[in-house]
Image 1 (cartoon, rainbow, N blue to C red):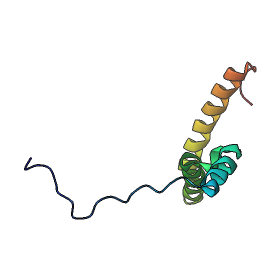
Image 2 (image 1 turned 30 degrees about the vertical axis):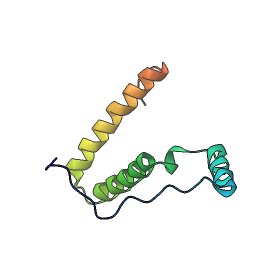
Image 3 (image 1 turned 180 degrees about the vertical axis):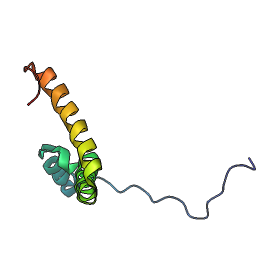
Length: 87
């Protein structure tokens, strides 16, 4: 029992669910959630902004390397779509 931490304050008592709580829950439950509404979606958007900023600071050799990577991604995506080759 020595390893169990004793708390001076007890955790708050749960309040009874009110009709207002239920109405808010139903409103939120019916709301369409997009990827941008999620933490992951916001993180992806932030990373895209960071990539754009980094590319703006890149030298020509680094941009050539990035273009090659993007061309590979385009080719892979075209293959998934059943298209012939990449542009």
